[in-house]
Length: 123
Figure (cartoon, rainbow, N blue to C red):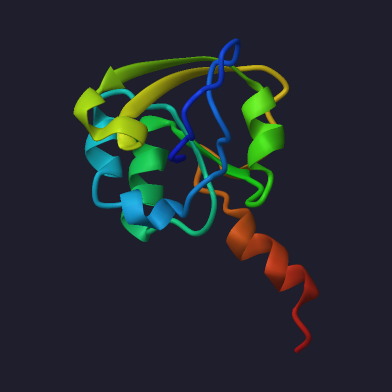
């Protein structure tokens, strides 16, 4: 999830920092049912989204906030596939290379936002 800046000549996309993903949670299950297999953003996801990801074999990648210029260098092609009238908020298909992201929630529902803090929590 990103609201990219306009592309400069010779670039596929402008500055492209990840946005908070939970704002998209109401719209995510229908997209997963239509075949969406991966999402990139930052922050937590709802139980409904995670359950639907498990059902349809989708993955959620976390990207680092504040790294918009670095991230945009990894985007080689950007194509609006739906809702062009929404501008930066339209749905884009991105071709990426060496994209700096990590699998935060896998297709089985394993969630780093839940498992990792437990390792470091003082009892």
